[in-house]
Amino acid sequence: MENRSSVPPSPEAPAAPSPNGPSLDAPSPNAPFPNVPAPASGRACGGGPGPAVLPARSPAGARLRSTAWVRWLAVGALLTGCCSALPRGRACDALYAATGVASALAVVLGVRLHRPAAAGRWYLLAAAQLLWTCGDVVHGLREDVLHRPPFPSAADVLHLAAYPVLATALHALTRRRGPGSDRAGLLDGALVATGLGLLCWVFLMRPAAGGGLNGPFAQLLSLAYPAADLVVAAMVLRVLVPAGLRNGSYWLLAASLVLLTLTDSAFAALSAAGRGDARILDAGWLLSYLLWGAAALHPSMRTLSEVAGRAASKLTRRRLAVLAAATLLAPGVLFAQGACGAERIDWLAVSVASAVLFLLVVVRVADLAAQVQVQADRLAELAGSDGLTGIPNRRTWDFEVARQLARAARSGDPVCVALLDLDHFKRFNDAHGHLAGDRLLCGAAAAWQRQLRSGDLLARYGGEEFGVLVVGLRAEQAAAVLERLRGATPLGQTFSAGVALWDGTESAEALLDRADRALYRAKSTGRDRVAVAADGARLPASGQE
Image (tube, rainbow, N blue to C red):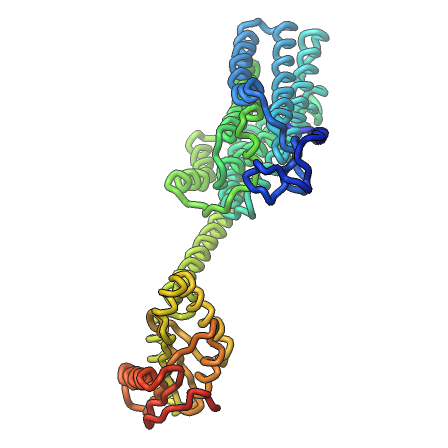
């Protein structure tokens, strides 16, 4: 099986610099970037921890790396066929153990060939595989050499010890692949695992606990196997559910885990029925070992443990169907026991599982509602903001002007609106380019906002025109505020502006029309000034407060 040991890959020795080769102080003139020194052969281009970059590979080595997993599957399929054809006995046990050891070595070889960044997780997978293989060896020795019952024995301890190692490796692998916590994936996995846990208890664990096994140790082991299988099933869901990178190594690893879980579940069910020695189960375990080794030998295993970009967790129809089936397992178990006339109804287990499933569904729905609300707020924000400058757009401007006028009608506070226009903006665009024009608009909006009070509003009215809404100031005071804005205009540019004070009765359209006429007067009388619409007066270009 796949696994990783705690032994990190040994770094490659740095290549000795050639006396005639390029130095760090004198980069090669043939380098694609002459001002950047070429890295020494065999060294990583960037600092920090991580596996060293392999030196130039020969074509034969490249072919080995790209086809090793195919060759392994071919050899492993042959070993599996031979093991299945042999009768039970020492030869079959030896070949079975050899296949398990070879699978663990295949994982180690894959790590050495491809040098993934998270090598330790793969070594843990190899360690789990070795623990299973050691358990198989002890099982075979007791059954075929010592002729003693293989259960319960040290083989079961070794088999069970592999499960937490496997779960740790898979948890670390899935945790690294995600850039953050996948709450939806965790909830969905917990929901499915709860339903499967109920089935496991009703049909496997409770019969094993009351099956009349000799001694508490045997009963404990009988309960531990289904529990360990449940943990593996939960980790399989953690691998399959979250969004992320799907490559060849991922699918091989997922197939191996699914096959392992199904084979373990079939073994538990057949054991409960007194048929735990079916040969087909050995083939299932061996095939899961082969797929495990193939996942490590596949070239894409280098990227399997890399952090994937954050992707939204989609509630697809297939996913919804799985969740619905999981939530219906509790009433389904209750119905099956009642319909079959079971002597004992597991009302406590069904009740607990139903409560947990209900709570998980409630949390999941609450998360979905919160996600929808966040998206709605974001859409509302985008709908009310200018895409270039980030300040409120014309839609928000119209709404706020109408709202402030309605409020002023009740309170009697003065309200001024101003329209300002960057002078000769088209000439600036033609001379410096549209990107420079965009930077001017963004820089001007940011600079003007810093000059306004917290209750004032700056919005993009259209093109190079902006609107300013000032509440609580008379027209002359609002004009002084605009003079501060005029002095803060970046890149040596200027603007012309018109200010109008609401008379208490006119409509928003009429108020804006007066401000627009004042703006036209400021532009026609020389630009770079602020004109007040109330009495037609014009402030001097120097700006006085």
